[in-house]
Length: 328
Image 1 (cartoon, rainbow, N blue to C red):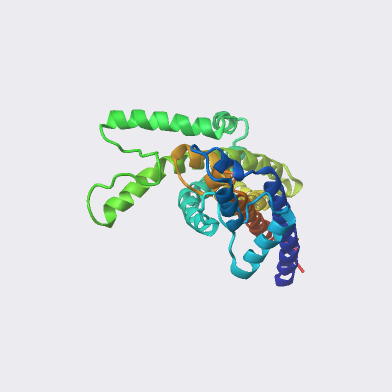
Image 2: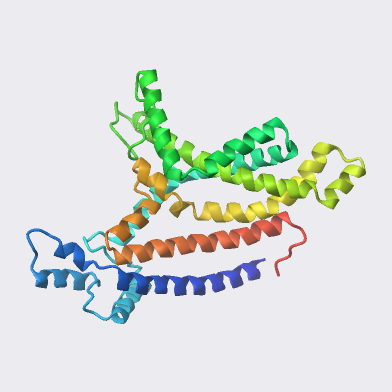
């Protein structure tokens, strides 16, 4: 197992290095940090602009290969991912936004996956019954609706709920608001109020997609020969479903879950933008809009690491769930 994981890691690290390097060349040739300064009114001194861009390794007057070598050397020797055109330190931005995304996404993502697996497996055991059809219609409605639409609709419903309740129960703009009172409890309550609605949206989105996947996998498992054989031998229905069908259906689900959990940091751009959370997904959009070459590459590298972790976790989960798989 350990040898297999190390070999996979080595392969992924090489692929990650190639992907990040290609991203740097693409960003350095397509983004134009100089344009941010040229649009200033009153105009800035061109020599001052060039000095700032040279200091931050962003000058398009320097050959892109030389900028790449400088950028790579700083990462290897100092773990310095550079600065944005406006002077923000990329390392600081990444380190702070990771925790914002973690607070926002962890509970919603995990609950969505767990509930989706449970509802999908349950619906499969009640195929073509009214409950199965209701679950199918509701989940297909959520899956076919864009995430930003669900986010805005949830804000409209929350606003109406606050009006009916007579006080501001749902908070949905930003990570924090006005804290009433002193001590840790008012601060925690304010955080929870701001997390509640986006967490519900993320849970709903994850639940809907996961339940559709799990239902189809469970139906395939229930119709397989070994499950029918277990039933024919007199095995109780519940035991046949739980021990044989569900475990088999969870094998491909493990791959999906591993990638979903690992990549959740950069997978909720719409949710972060709509609810005003300064997380990794929102940062990825901001770096492109802000002509931030170093920021774009750093986000890409972080996303690549997440995919790497997801790939390794999926292999391990499959090996645990499927006794036929042996990692040598």
